[in-house]
Image 1: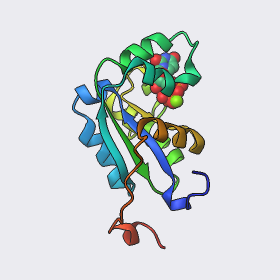
Image 2: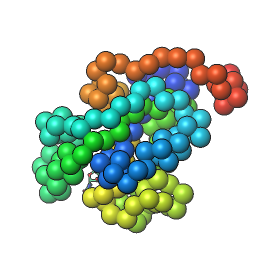
Image 3: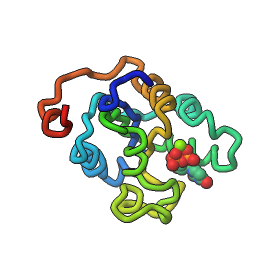
Length: 156
Ligand code: UDP
Ligand code: MG
């Protein structure tokens, strides 16, 4: 939501089927936790093609779209929401570039994968798309709770 406080910005992050099959859930979620982001929603989902077509509606018509939907529907994903300062832009920076070979070492894609069509994770690209994606994947809403580390991560 655009009028959420700066340190409560949210982004939708998803570990794709290859990341789940390669047992990278813990490592990927851990990076966001270690950075200081709060996990406010998380679930395993084996998404339908219909749901995935909604998620990737902006890309409909691209030559890679059918292959992308097939890949994303090939197994369960781990969908979660991070909350914290600059979650969308910093979340994307932590993921790396769409093409893993162009991703800096130290980013998730730069450390764990090699090709665009198997780039193991998704992250929202704007605050508005994050809100849209969170509503699509978590229609039940996220969990609001006090984070006891808050005062050690933020000045106020
Ligand atoms: N993708 C692909 N081929 C391409 C471009 C994208 O297979 O040439 C896939 C890739 O998995 C990517 C996803 O489609 O992560 C969504 O593309 P987008 O441009 O939104 O990249 P992202 O936001 O994931 O970095
Ligand atoms: Mg994208």
